[in-house]
Amino acid sequence: MIKIRTLLPVVAVLGAVAAPAFAQQPQATDLSVLLKQTQQVRAEAEAKFATRRKEFEDTPEAQKAALTAKAEQQRKELDTSSQKLADAYAANEVRINNLNNQLRDKAMKLGLAEVFGLARQAANDASTVLQQSLITTQFPPAAGQPSRDEWMRKFAAARGTPTAAELERVWVEIQREMTAGGQVAKYKTRVVQPGGQNVDADVIRVGPFNATANGQFLSYLPNLHVFTVLPRQLPAEFMSVASAFQNASSGYARAVVDPNRGVLVGMYTERPTFMGRIQLGQEVGYVIMTVGGLGVLAFLFQLVSLVLVRLSVNSQLKHLDRPTANNALGRVLLAFKGDKNRIEEDSEVAELRITEAVLREVPRLERFQAFLRLAVAAGPLLGLIGTVWGMIITFQSITESGSSDPKLMATGIGQAMIATVLGLGVAIPLLFANALLNSLSRGVVQILDEQSAGMLAESIEKKRHA
Image (tube, rainbow, N blue to C red; front, side, top):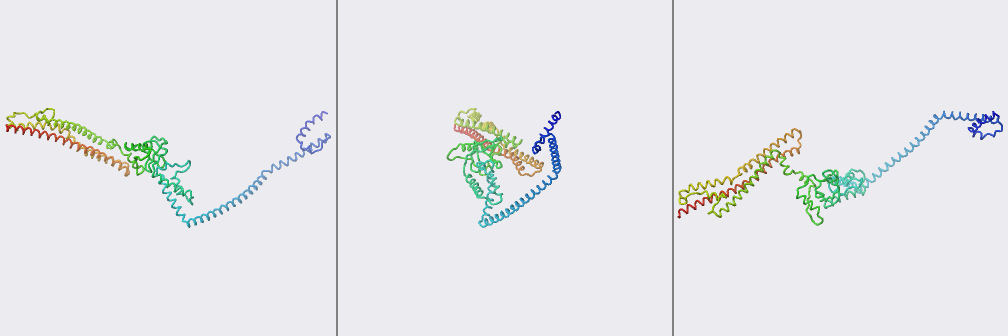
C-alpha cells in the first residue's frame, strides 16, 4: 500500500503531461498496464522531440532556400509587371507625341500658333507694366496665388498650348489696366509708414500716376507691391491741394498729377531746402550769407531814414519862409547868414555857406551805400572762391576713390556751384537796393541844391529891385 501511494503522484504528473497520448490508449485496469502505457507514451514523445529537433536544425537552410525561391518568384513577377508598365509608358509617349503632332498640324492650319505666340509676347510686355503700375495694389491676388504680373511672366515662359481661360485672363488683365488707368479710385490697402509699420489706410489713386493717403503723398515699391509714405513731403501748396482733393466727395477738384508716375514727385522732394543749400556752400556760403544779411539790414535802415528825410523835406517845402532845424532843407536854409543889404557883395560867401550846409547833409543821405557797393562786388567773388574750392574737393574725392562715377562728379559739381549761386543771389538784390538808395539820396540832394540856389538868387534879385 505504501508503494502504491508513492507512485500515485508520479503517475498523476505523467498523466497531466501526456494527456493527449493517453486519450488514444485504452483505459488501464492494472498497474502493470499503466506502467507499460506510460513507457510507450514516453518513447513516442522522445521520438517526436527528436524529429522536431532535427527539423529545427535543418530549418535555416531550408527557409533560406524557400525564401530565395519566393523572392526570385516575386522578382520575376515584378519584372513582368515593370515591363508591362514600361511598354504602356512607351505606348503612351508615342500616343502623346502623335496627338501633339496632330494638334500642332491643326493649329498651323488654323493659324493658332501665331496667336499663341502673340499672346505670350503681349503677356511678357504687360508683366513689366503691371509690376511698375501702382494699380496692382488695388487688385491684390487671392491667398496663395501669384500677383497678376507674376502670373503674366509665368504664362509668357510656359510651354505648350494655353487654355482658353489663360488667354481670357491675359485680355482681362490688360483691359483692366487700361480701364483703371483713366479712373480716380479710393480703396483700402497697406501703407508702410516712415517708421516701418504696415498700416491699412484709405488710398486715393489718380490713374497710374500718383496716390495719396491721409493728405500725404505715397511712393510705390514695385518689388513689394505696397505703398510707402514719402519721408519728405511736397511744399505746403501741394499738400493743401492733396488734402482738399481727399476731402472732396463730388464734382471736380484740383489734384496733383505726376505724369512720370512718381518720378517728378520724388525728385521734387529731394530738392534741398534754403538752409540745406546754404549748408552745401559750407564755410564760404556762411560768409556770403553774413555779408548779404548785413547788406539787407543796412538797406532797410537807410531806406527808412531816407523816406523820413524825404517826408520832412517835402513838409519844409511848404513853409520855406519858416525854416526849422529838424530837417535837412531847414538846416541848409538856416545856414545862410549875412546882411541882406550887402547880399550882392557877400554872394560868394553865402554860396559857400550853402554849399557847406549841403555837403554836411550828403554823408547822412548816402550812408551805407559804399558798403552795399562793396557787398555787390564781393558777393560773386566769394562765390567764385567757394566754387573753385568745391571743385578742388570734388576732384580730390574722385582721385581718392578711384571711381569715375558721373553721379559722384555731378553731385560734387552741384555742391560747388551753390557758392556761386549764393554770391549772385546776394549781389543782385543788393545791387538794386543800392540803386534805390542812390536814387532817393540824389533826389534829396537835388532838392537841397535847388532850394538853396533859388533862395540865394531870390535874395540877390530883391536887393537889386530895392
